[in-house]
Image (cartoon, rainbow, N blue to C red):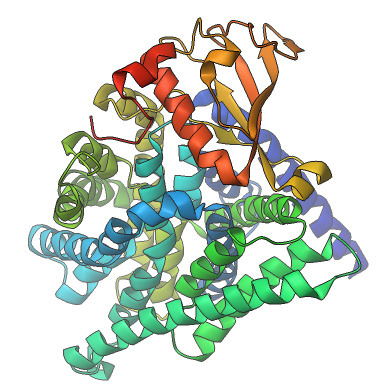
Length: 505
C-alpha cells in the first residue's frame, strides 16, 4: 500500500510540474494551456503509458469540484465596477442566449444527423456553456476593451448554472419528466434561490471575516474558498443552483474590504490553476483515442453550426437590446463576442452527466464533445488576438492587475497595475507628468530594454515600455480611464474631449 501511494505521488507530482512548465510553452505557441493538459492526459492514458481510467461518475464528481474552485476564482477576481455595466447583457446572454443556442444546435442535429429530439437537445445544452477557465486564461493575453472582457467573463461565470440544470433535465428519461411548466418553474426557482444563497453567503462571510481577527494571515484565503464551497453545498442541499451561488459569493467577497485580500486572491488563483490542471488531465485520461476517429466528422459539423450559427444568433438576440447609444455593443463587439464564446472543460464535464446516467448514445455524445472542444478551442484560441485587432476591439493601454504580496499596499487599500506601451500607442513620446493621473495614482517604475528605473516627471515614455503604477482603490477606475484616453489621443486627450470611456467604435 505504501509503495502504491509513493508511485501515485511520484506520477502526480511529475504531471503537475510538467503542466506548470507547459503554461509557458502554451503562451509562447499561442495555444490555450488546457489543450496541453488534455493531450497530457491522453498520453499517460491507456493509449500511451497504459494508465487505465474509465470511471465517468468519478470524473463527473471531481469535475464538479474543480468547476466550483474555478468559478469561485472567477468571481473573486471580478471587479464590481466593471461587472455592473454588463450585468444585464450577461444575464440575458446566460439565459435567453443559452435557450437560443440549445434550440438551434438541437434542431440542426435532429434534422441533419437523424438524432432523436432528446439527445439532439442534449447536444445543444452540453455545448451551450462557455468555459470559465478557457475564457479567463485566454482574455488575460488578449487585450480587448474592458466592457467586452467583463461581459465574456461574467457570461462564463453565470451560464454554467442554467446549463447544468438543462443537462440534468435532458438526461432524465422521458417517462420520469414532469410537465414543461413544472420544469420551467424549477429552473426559475433554482436560479433565483442560488443567487439569494450566494448573496447571503457572500455578505455574511465578509461580515464575519472582518470581525474574526484570525491568528494567521493564511487562514483568510482558506476561509474565503471555504465560503464559496459552503455556498455551493447550501445551494445543492436547497435544490438551488450551486454554481450560481458560488459565483455570486465570489463576487461579493472579492469586492468587499477584507483583511489580507491580496493573499486571498493569490491563493484562489493558485487553487484555480490546480483545479484546471487536475480536471483537464483527468478528462484526457477518461477519453479513449481509439473511439475518437468516428466522431471527427460529426464534431466538425456540430462545431460549425455552433460557431457560425447558434452562437452568433444567441449574441444577436441577447445583446442587441443593449446596443443602443454610444455605450452599447456594436456589430464589431457582437462579432467578437460570437467568436470568443470559448468551450473548454465544462462541456466535457457536462457530457459525463448523461454518460454516468447510462443514457443511450451518451458515449457518442462524449466523444463528439471531446473532439469538438480540442479542435475549436485550438482554432479560436489562436485566432482571437488577430480577430480582436481586425475588428478594432483591442485596448492597447489596458492596465493589468498584478497579484503581489505587499503588506503596505494592503494597509493603504492600494492596487499595483502594469501597463504596456505597444507599437502604435500614443503613449509613446508622452512625458510621465503629462499622463495627468489623479491624486492617489503614481508611476513608480519603468521597465525598459531589460532594465528598470524610477521615472522623473520629465521622463518620456517609449514603445515597449512597461509601467508599474500604484493606485488607491478610490481612484483606480479614474486612472484606468485616463490611461486609455492618453493611449488613444496622446497628451491632448482632454482637448479632444476624450475621457477614456469604453465606447463603441
